[in-house]
Length: 162
Image (cartoon, rainbow, N blue to C red; front, side):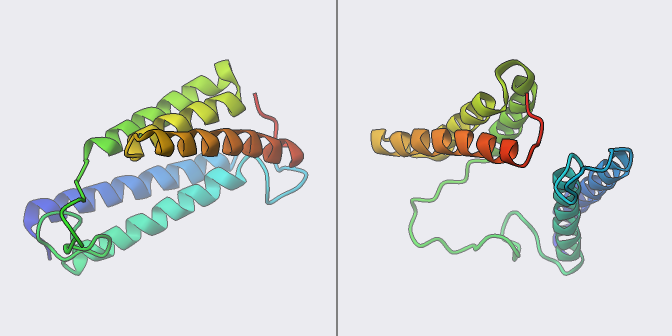
């Protein structure tokens, strides 16, 4: 097993994610069947929860096998060898991603899915990019095309969006 504290926190996180996924799946049982199943109101949350549970099980297996996500421990997910020193660990980025996701969900009723999606992708793209003008132009183009494209795709599948 990896060091005690890391293993306990990894295992605790995995168990919490399994519980969240299971709770999501349990809550979806009351969703009405969509006329075009499996694409319906419950399909995407169900399969997202299934993916979260699967990844949490991989993390739990890693804890049992002595793998870890941090420190000098061997990891399933990241290499400990960088090609050069240009890679910087940015743990605050995960907090930004979670906050942006919560803000996106809160903004959809007010802004509509299309514009909330564009704003969400702009914020995350800005955070992930090197913030050079060319990179920001690519981020803006991807956000616009994706926002309009996702909106059009969901409407074509007759998914009701705000």
